[in-house]
Length: 556
Image 1 (cartoon, rainbow, N blue to C red):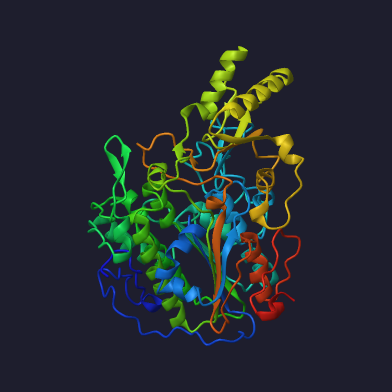
Image 2: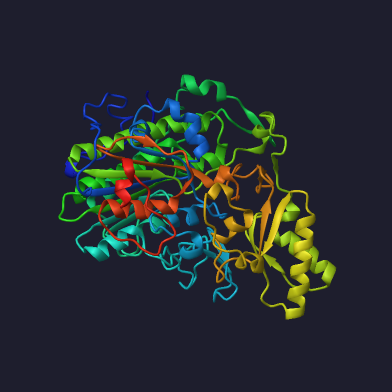
């Protein structure tokens, strides 16, 4: 299949430029063997590869599972946990990525959302982005200096490097927050896409492979992309769904005008570029070929941008699922060619929900868009008018999640505003629950199967008393907190419900005997499981080791 999204082929050791397979020999069969002999791998792997597919819900995984024939099909021959959970309530990109390689829930990582309100911040704007340093003069939450300062815990890579300084830690992603939260505080290489190029912290030397990647991707973005052919399994989904104002989704085939970098992100080719850079760093740095086990984390971000832009159930996502499978296959083929014994785990930072307009057509009548009055600013104005307090009272991003009360209020005013806010939100027909910070603090950290946790327990797992809101508002299931679909994003995630919490967790290593575990596990279980495979003791985390061999020998 001719497609700009086929994996970008990398030449070994930088002897040739990176070439998109769609321009070169795209679709040509690979001859590299895939090792599949069953058994128990001996000794620790030389390279750990952690892949997070942003917004790859367990629902998507189950829906397309039978169609996978390449990279994801390989992972299906390993340890399959189809009911993994980002068990907390804050199902956003930054919190989710903070759990994957740390073993801690957001209540301990400190990453309670993509953004939060810090009214004590010295700058005029009080919104803080999870991966920024807000103390940099002139910065804002949308024009910031990337930083790891808000991540309160170490990652697996950090622990590996502390145990053996010869370990190399590498992190690559389509988003800065994904790269930072999975890579951690001590990395050898950390690169993310800033909308124009792959970049890193200021002052970091750009390796040759990054320069080659940027040159190639710039050329790719500069020329137009023809629409992808609709595969047979996607034809039934190739239907337009009206969103109002003449806008529709469901028939997008990723045609892109020359120079449209924004459309490049919501495109399968974006994952191809990210995986290509990761593969190039493996090659150029000879990861897995040194005296210690190395680790590379990869944040594939295209699925998230596609889900937000088009929803999760149209032709766009169907095509992306096929391209993701092929792109991962190409990535694994490059790793195979190195001859390194590597272990892969693939999961997601959160799931996602489709556009309500298509859900209604699919007999989900409760699907709807949130009323604008639910926004904290709008709700705060109504409360101010009633109580006669002439100041902004409530702060928050969207009508779902954390809401902060103004710290300028007197104790009496605060009590009155909190009571009025709780009463008003609870009276709204689209609201499922309202929890105060006191309610959440009084809830013990949850235990047992994550599918059975209450809403309060899910909230507790992502509650940090130094950063979380004064109250937490949960919309009812299938209520999308995007009131108007006229903007760039039409669908989203972030709810405490299983379509946003449940994600696949897949382990694979050459020689591994495949199995499937249907029970609920958590993404915080990934780090202790990987640590056990390399003999690294990991204590005090929220997760537990998952058995990857028969009889539970891998966790003894």
